[in-house]
Every structure is written in structure tokens, then in C-alpha cells.
Image 1 (cartoon, protein in one colour):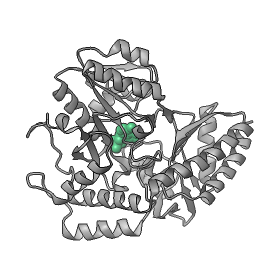
Image 2 (tube, helix red, strand yellow; image 1 turned 180 degrees about the vertical axis):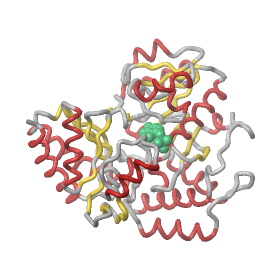
Image 3 (tube, rainbow, N blue to C red; image 1 turned 60 degrees about the horizontal axis):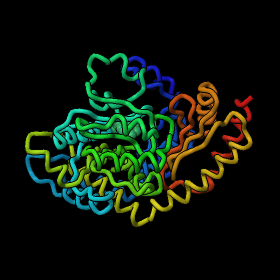
Image 4 (tube, helix red, strand yellow; image 1 turned 60 degrees about the vertical axis):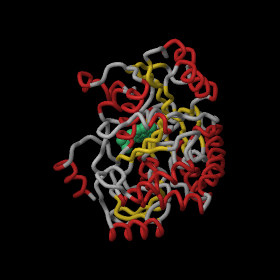
Length: 395
Ligand SMILES: Cc1ncc(COP(=O)(O)O)c(C=O)c1O
């Protein structure tokens, strides 16, 4: 493994703070590193591998499609893309019925921003503090964290305004006749697993309605069953005008997707937007297969049940360990806020040594995003390891 770490330093951009491990193989909930050590995966490629690793049905579908047609230009019609659009329309919230496919979460956000500005013929976008929408320039302009933004400030777009998350009265003051859209995550992921309050999300919906702005929900991390619903907005009974998806949608094959009400999506005309790889047959087949498997194995409802089970375990830890400030989240998107960044970092490192892959975000929040196939014994194993580690680092 040391050789991989060395080559990483020599040949790769050092943009990631990587854990000292490299995996070569996965199966279901498990990963194996270069030395053959086995780990339980509670990160799932950051909410990507919803079916776990090497799902045989997904592998077969990808391999069959690769043998037929991997890529096709959007200069022609693509059968797999329209099939995926139809399938997504069946599960999408509210009146979202038309889709544009790209390759990542950030691209799906860029698409949503362009679409909103074109549709509303207005300039301003309202976003929330602690938001994370991606690293490309439009998405970064909508992302809150100063350390991500500052070095690139001269390139960021104007017309983005931040309001405190879950503060409806600030939104009421900020949305005006020049606001094209309000964009929020129903549960802020990178920002520390912060759950939108029903009053906030429903209030934003009403406010947008009232003042003629669009409501964009960024479901890149929360979408595709992660929170125990296909889309997290279903927990709130809130229907977006525009929604973004990526991560879990194709089970690990890169894809981005922006959905909108037809009337909104039809504001895009030929030439307004495009992506060479967007919606290629391979990615679309993978996404179609993921959705069909999630439906057939009822994994979305299962994510809700397993999330409740997981949450109970985390709550018990909260009671027993004073270094735990709060546990929060929905379904299988859960966070445990500790009272210090070093503690969180220490827990992640120690967990890795014990064969558990977990993540810390926003500095001091342990984040759990397992594949939706996670089972009770996996959760039990993690909870007892966390119990030991929190006792050790908690002082
Ligand atoms: C809510 C949200 N939006 C957008 C993104 C950006 O996605 P990507 O890294 O695929 O560009 C992320 C990534 O974590 C995300 O969580």
C-alpha cells in the first residue's frame, strides 16, 4: 500500500485528504484493501454505491450494455436515455417529468441554475449557509464554505445570496421580483447532515409560489432512496420545480440528472445546454437497473427501517458519551456531531484500523451513508466499535 501512497503524492493532484488505505475489491457491504484486510463500508463512495459493491445484476446489465453500445452522441436519439426519463418520471416528485442528463452532481446543479435563470428571466439565486452544491464555478458560487470559495473568489458568479439554513424569515426578506430560484438541500450533507425543518421547506415552497421564483431541491446526496423515500422532499410533502440527482442514481457509474416540470424544462431550446457524455447508454442502463432493483427488492422502505434501527443505536451512544453533541438525519443518511474536530478525525482513523470505513464532514460530524443493503449485524458491529472508540477519545 505504501507504494500507492507514494505514487499518489508523485503523480496526482493533492486535492483530497485521503485516508491511508486503498481498496481493490468489494462485495455487498464489504471492501478489501491491497493487503487483503476486510472492511465494512459505511460511506458507500459518499452515498453512491446504493446496492453495495459488485451487485451481480448491476454488473451483468453494465457488461451486457458495454458489449452493445457504451457511448452514443446526443446528436441522435438514445433509447436507454428515454427509457430512463420515463422511469424517473414515475418516481419523481410532484410534476417533475422531464430530465437532462449529465455526469456529476455539480453538473446537475449547473444545469438547474442555467434552466432557472432562463425560465424565470430573472437574475438572483437564493441559497443557504452551510450548503454544498459542488466545485464547478456555478455550483461553487452556490456553496457556502469560505475555504472552498476564497481562493477562487475572482471567478465566482455574482447574484448569489446566502441566508441562514432553516430561517424562513430571512428568506422572506430576500426573495424579490428578481429572484429566479431558491436552491436548498432537504438535508445538508457535506454541511454536517443538517435536516431542513418542515416549516422552512414548506415555507420556501409557498414563498416561491407567491413571488414567482422556482424552488430547486438539490437531492444529489439525498435522492434515490437514501433517506427512506425516493426523494427526501417526500418527507415534507414539498414538490420542487427543479430537482438535481447524481450520486446513487447509477450505483457508481457517473451520472448527473436535472429534472423539472415540463413547462420549466421546455425553456431550454436546442443549443442552450449540452454534455458529450451526458445520458450515454452505459450510464442510463446502469441507472435503469438500479431503480428496478431498488423497486423489486423494496430497498427504499428498507432504508427507512434500517435507518430507524441505526438511529436507535446512535441515540444510545449519545446518552452514554458526553462528547456526542447530537445525532441527526433521516433513513440511511445519519450524522453524529462530536464536540471537537480532532475527536472526529481520531474516531475515523481508529475505526479504519478496526475495519470500518466511516467519514467525518463539516469537521466534527461523523457521517454514515452505508449502502441501502446494510443489515442489522453490520450496524451492531459499528455501534459497538463506536462505543469503544468514543469511550477512548471522549476523555
Ligand atoms: C448536495 C450535493 N450537491 C452537489 C454535489 C456535487 O456532486 P459532485 O461531487 O458529483 O459534483 C454534492 C457532492 O457531495 C452534494 O452533496
